Amino acid sequence: MSGRSGHLGLVPRVVPPVLFGGRRAARLVERNAMVYRRIWLILVSGFFEPLFYLLSIGVGVGELVGDITLPDGRIIDYTAFVAPALLASSAMNGAVYDSTFNVFDKLKWRKIYDAVLATPLGAGDVALGEITWALIRGLIYATAFLIVMLAMGLVLSPWAVLALPAAVLIGFAFAACGMAATTYMRTWLDFEWVQLAVLPMFLFSATFYPLSTYGPALQWVVRITPLYQGVALLRGLTTGDVGPELVLHVVYLVTMGLIGLSIASRRLERLLLR
Image 1 (cartoon, rainbow, N blue to C red):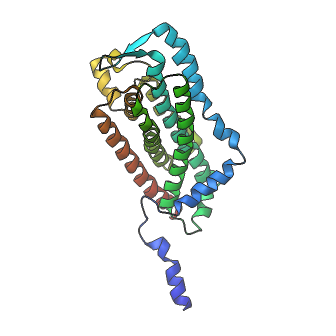
Image 2 (spheres, helix red, strand yellow):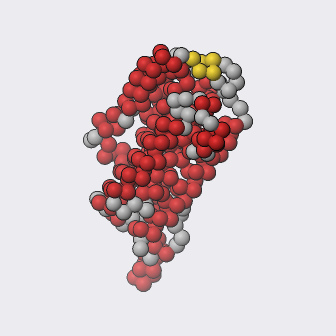
């Protein structure tokens, strides 16, 4: 009987990992929620950065820029043009920083995941749990930001009801890829590469200027960047500029997220169970 029990105890380490996690991932989400009850100010503070950008650039600079012409010919206020892009950027930033800095700290310094894997949770559960927590935070920020947009009259279409799920999708794509990238990082200095990737996307993904302001060659570069997919998706939903191309943005982000989650699960399995 003891030999049988010892054999069964090895099973979780021998069977192939569940790449996309399982129902036990909710336990890690619960653990994170309990931790943030003590540091809730950090959670709340993430909402204010995009709000300040909206008030300073959208409202302040918007008075100087004037109106913007959409691809379908409609003219909208500059603030209504920038707001959905800032919502997409907020989803990206929150997901990236939560799935990189926080995950690296738990993985390399505090060794929290080593303790987690002493429980029935697996590496796939860790990856899915951390990404789910990043999405929950992103959903909180997106909801608050969308309420501000509604109060300011910046929501121009009933399609905006899909803006929240779209923001969660953006967060999923960036959180999964951010966590996958974190598994390759060795020191805090490696996070300079994160800034090098995130800042240009924030500035040049048609966030503050229409795509038509770029040259033809640069337009194609912008079109293939991940953040542009989110900006174009949310801008189309909140302004009513809805077409078949929005489906392509969704497919891009879903594929990006699934690839990132698969890589993160495999890498965590290799790092933590070697």
